[in-house]
Length: 412
Ligand code: NAD
Ligand code: MG
Image 1 (cartoon, protein in one colour):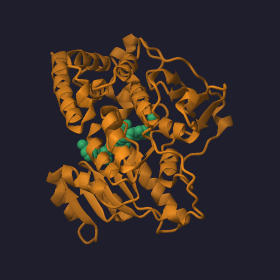
Image 2: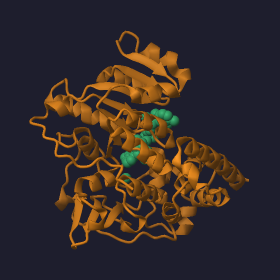
Image 3: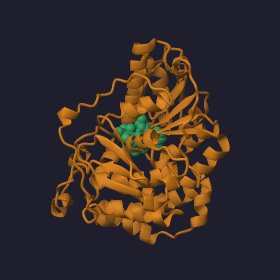
Image 4: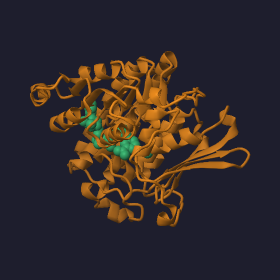
């Protein structure tokens, strides 16, 4: 398997102007990553000049007010709202501007297909898959924050990237960190790639206490401010499980070379160990604007508004092994990574449904791994389907339906 992430290139750019002239599209601009991306762009315009990083398109699912406010400030050519019932409202709030307006799922996908040098994929969940593939098909640079689309459709994504020669730049902090320190002509030179995990808000909680955890407690992450779904994934450690699968595809690494270590300070984002005994790590303050700025400027670097690392302030960096008994989701994800085929697709779909049910107060925190495991047990394998987009979408839909029923039964 070839690596999905773009290869380091020796592109010679005499000055920053070609980088700053890149047009950027932000899919999911009103979310946590989207807002941080616009913050990096705003900073670049202040720092380098108002023309820096012109924006082609912004998209959001339902937050019309937020999207319109962003559009008025950042001046994209087009603003797209995913929920088509909100078209007139968006049109109304952007009247008097020259910003084009569109709505609906197909308009979000079309926005990804518009000409731009960089597409930031910051939509939450497997809903990002088709928009991401539309960007990939153009052979452009895809700054990939979304992990669910790679987990759900790794093989399909691979093929699409290979066919179009798109450059995939990982934005997920651990994968962006690996991308920065991974330098191997052959994965045989790599002994192990270790992703760090903060351990989430329940790192030291007993299983008994976790049973009663509320959505408010689960989304209160100690180090990162993120969207609700990824925050719950961080609390169950499913996030780290999804990230192992993401790393497996992005860097073409065999399962046995991937590991997780809990590092509560979230300063070291990855460790790449080579066969000669060297280990290279990436450190930064826990601030997504750092990997976002890296992805927007790659292979150069631009100034970003992110918090800078203060090691004396951090004082201590500690590491511990993850607890597989309390964090079952991590084990389920590792098993699915080993099984391959559609197992990661089903895992991801079931998890999205279970997290939604938990956030809606319909199931408990420890019901999340139970719901995912039951859905996996009830699902047929069907590895061949993992090779086609239609097969993946069908398996995703089937798993969601099953998981909904499983969650429903848990409530009664
Ligand atoms: P979020 O929930 O804050 O924002 C999601 C964005 O996607 C919003 O703009 C929303 O309008 C849009 N969206 C939601 N559903 C959509 C749909 N069906 N169609 C089109 N657009 C839709 O999420 P986030 O925390 O910014 O995370 C986004 C992605 O980035 C996730 O895949 C997450 O795993 C990944 N990621 C996030 C962080 C982080 O710090 N937040 C870090 C690493 C990776
Ligand atoms: Mg991450």
